Structure formats: structure tokens, C-alpha cells
Length: 355
Length: 138
Figure 1: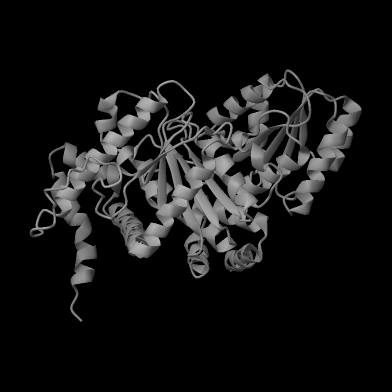
Figure 2 (figure 1 turned 180 degrees about the vertical axis):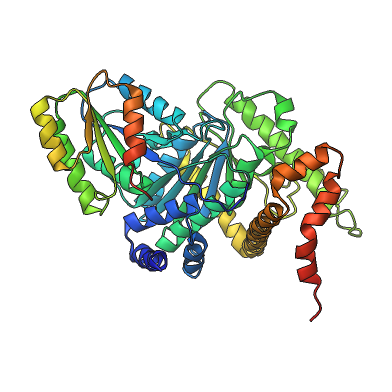
């Protein structure tokens, strides 16, 4: 079992702090190379110490430049940093140009900032698994901070930042009228909103719009959370027009709004402090443990889905392959529901077996 | 399609090292590699050898394509190769050089461990085919 030996060596080298081993482990994870699951499960015991921060926002919002400055700030404090930057890949060729590295200028030559580009590889769901596992590798390696940077363009990207403890959403000035702010999506996942390029025209307006949106959202969730609580759940006499006493979300954290100019590093200190505040809040409120529980539950479910999916692939083959099944449905010999019942039946039988 | 199937992908770092400021060729190569289905990491202009080494090691690329037009390949390429060796990354990285390189220097670069030198006018398919055939496994 040379692969097993290779993996044991890789894990040992990674834990020893060898960059090459860390890089190779992430490659194995990305490739879903044979035995990669064993690799990740060996790492698990060594994880749990890194603070994981997700950074998302529309293309051109300045994420990479900001991440670079954040990494620089953490390094000045003597902390080590891992960055995973996720970029889209071509749905046709699978190819990708991963260009975020260019903007990591402040940390050039500093191996203690481990920057890794990751492509979406056109996979559904698989990407978030790979990213979560890569975070584990960086965590086990001993990184103090792990930053996941991703384009907030689709549902998949939102899933990825969910694997972070704290999520910052970048909103460039003038990024749309107030209707955009009302839309569901990435604005709902932010613990911190960053109006980057705050020196541009329209920044004040964007900050104002975000502030209104945050309050509106909190009113909404507060109403939900207290829906079946008795008197006192919703203090009717509170005016709620003061910024600091605005209703808080169900987890007791009111999303913060920070202005930055990533190019010059302005506001980065404030941002880093706000992220730390959120982290402290998570720890003191018990939300961190709660998030962790949810994440592991999701991870276990994902793995099981993959496993069952693999079993089903085998069953489909045993039934003559997908093409055959489809053809029979098309000729009206059977229908999709019956096919599904038929294929799953042996697996169900196994599970139903007494004893 | 199974969710757990292997997803090997050829990863390439396209690097502009040294002082020359022309990266049109590097852009064209990056684009062609992308269209060939490779994952391309582009380094940007004016990189020092140790930056290239850092990127190649962290990104765990199978292929390192170095574009040099300045004529400084004899000093820059050895530094990159030494750096890769320092991180045990030399053995399984395919090193390519693109640019204007005299024949005598070509032989010397190859001796050092550069797999191939592609001069001006090399058809893109040739380079891509070479990568497909020679990229080390991960």
C-alpha cells in the first residue's frame, strides 16, 4: 500500500511544518485522489485552533487587495496566515485563470502567508467540501488565521463562506440602488459589511443604504424569533431609531459596517478589530460551538450523500446503465418514478433487513 | 456523474520574472492554457525568483512556465531552480522557458533541468501538447 505510506509521510511532514507537504495535501484534496478521505481524517485531530474568516463580494470589489492587507496586518502581529482564493472555472474546458495571487504584493517572499488558488472545477457541492478540507489542512499546519476568499456570484460560493466562522461581505460604492439591497443572497450572510473603495463618490450613500438594510433585516428576524414568545419578547415601547439600540439578529450580533480603502490600507485595522469582535461574540455567546456543530452535521451529511451516490451509480450500472433506463422511459415502457423505486430497492432491502 | 470521482487537473504557473515589462506573450499563453483545460496561475509582472518559487511551491503546480525576454535567463533561471530544490519541488515540476534564448544558452538551461525552451513563433498547440505529454502526475 504505497499510497497509504505516502499519505502517512505527507501528514507527518505537514504537521512538521513543511510547505511542500501542505501544498501536496491540498492538491490531493482538490483532486479527490484515492485515499484523500483518510488523509483528511488523519488531520482532524490537529484542527480547531485557526480562526476562519470568509471574504466575499462581487468581482472587482477589491477582495484580493483587502485580503493582502489583512494578511500583512496579522503578520505584523506575529500571526501566521493561510489564504484560499476560489475562482470560477470554464464550464466548457474546465480551464481557469487564477489571478488573485498577483495582488498579494505585501506578502511576497513571506512563506508564513500560505496563499493557495482554487478553481471551482465545475463541480456542484464538491467545491465546498474541497474548500472545507483545505481549511482543515491549513488549520492542522498551524495557521492562526485562515481566510477564504471567493466571488459571491452564486449559491455555491455562499456555501463556501458558510464554512467560515466570520463572514465579511464587500460592497463597493454605487453597487446598485436600494432595490439591489433588498434582494436576497449574499447580503444575508454578512457578519461584517465592508464598503471598500470608501474614497469613491457614493460611498456614504452605500453605507447609509447598508445601515438601513441591516436594521430592516434585524427587525424582520427579531419578529420571527420572538413570534411565539410571551410578553417582553418584543418591547413595543422601544423606539428603535437609535443606531446602537437597534434590534439584534437571532444570534445577538448586529452586522457591522466598516469603510476601507484597501489600496492604501485605510480602515484595515478597524476591519480586523471588528472581525475579532465578532469572534469574541461567537465565543462568549456559545455560537461558535453551535456553528461548529452545524458545520460538522453538514459535513457528515455531505459525505454520506457522496457515499450513497456512489452506491447508486453502481446500482444504475447493474440495471443496464443510465442510457438504457432513459431509453425505456422515453419509449413509455416505464417512468422515472418507477425506475427510481426499482434502483433503490436493493439498498432499501439491505437497510430494512431485521437484526 | 459520481461526486467522488477523481478530478485531476494540470496546474500551471505562468511567471514573468525579472525586469522586462512585456507580458503580452504570457497573457496569450495563459489564455491558451486555460482554453486547453489547464488551471493557470499568472504571477503578474516583475517577479523576483523567490516569489516564483513561493508561488510554485504553495500552488503545487505541475508546470512552471517562465517567460523571459530580457536576456537575463542565465542568472534568473538557476535561482528559481535552486529555490525549487530547497523546497523539494524541483523533481516533479515541469519547467519550461519561453522567450528569446540563444541556442548555446538553450543547451545550458536544459542541462540545469529546464525541460524545453520555446522560442518566438512556436505554435501554441506544440506547447500545449508538450505539457500534456510531460506534466508530472500529482
